[in-house]
Length: 121
Image 1 (tube, rainbow, N blue to C red):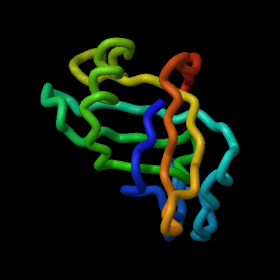
Image 2: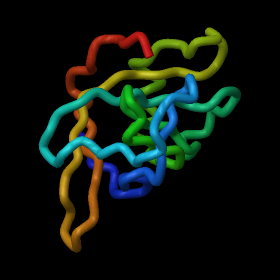
Image 3: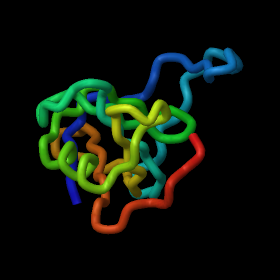
């Protein structure tokens, strides 16, 4: 298990999905302790272990673009599948949950022992 400290784990300001739908209200993050699935993906043409990874859930209520974690990067490389274009990016799906941290912040705990099944999003 990896607990990624709070960069990006915060309530979004507004929401529109890819089709442009949405009422402009900010969606709620999953509640602390609730389990959900996240997609973790690497960038195209970037083979640095310190590259910023992208982590998000299906509804994108949780969306993090600057997760730098070499251990997580190597898990994606070792256990992931190629991205949509089949070129150089890789992705995994993992179970995760929001946790409260000391000092009132939030963290994302990603469970890597058993990955989630591949999703269609």
